[in-house]
Length: 338
Ligand code: SF4
Ligand code: MG
Image 1 (cartoon, rainbow, N blue to C red):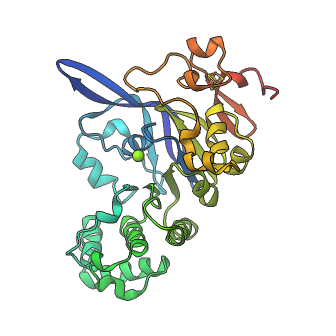
Image 2 (cartoon, rainbow, N blue to C red):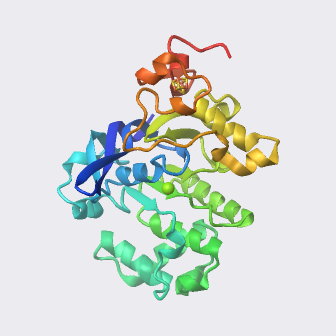
């Protein structure tokens, strides 16, 4: 399968100063993942588990206090060009060579990210010109109208200002702007959480279209909402306390989650008891750990109903169970009988 991104033991920490003591917040701490062409990955986990930091690290958007601490990150273009996290001398170089062109990130607050006083056509022109100095305004407008049409938005949108667009339209315009240069990888952070259910559906449909029309090769969809993942993703990636604890095909993970944390997540959303459903992920008893000093061994052990002695001492390795990879001692030496 065509790989678009490879992460190996990737680490990125925040440096935090309290008084004169420096602490390291281990937000991304030894992450392994492969992203393939045609992937729509649903990246899930409680808030504060490192999802957004992982996205920033994938973008190689590392500005203090966030710092790259080691491991490998490789981005592979359609043409086979390879970019390594260590090769860039500055953030400007990353921006110029990667962003928009090969990888793009739509942040959580993207709805407010468009300058309200600049027409969509001018915003798009600036995006396209950043990549191709020779493009003229008419060509840029034509390209923009095509992309808008692909996302079911009418031509006249180019003439509008962002403040004239409804929430759902604005979110689609944001997606159109982010993908104007046809990057291989699109990362979207909680794109639907601020929208009502009908608008959510429209935005999900737009994402699927971007993928199906091969306008982007891979999508990483960050959310805390498993129901959305089920609608859009082919694989689910579960993050807990700076690490990935389970990766597998959406259907099998939702039907038969392996990691006790994933089980907790799925139980809380599929529960027939409305109270548990409403509490969502927080229904799992206990709190996610402080990432300055995370628990030894398996980071989930203080909350895990299956914790054994070994879990408190040693970190579990990754085990393959069918098409799923899981980091949990229960599966060491084969599948447990549950
Ligand atoms: Fe629970 Fe142990 Fe598995 Fe961690 S390794 S999830 S503590 S059983
Ligand atoms: Mg976040």
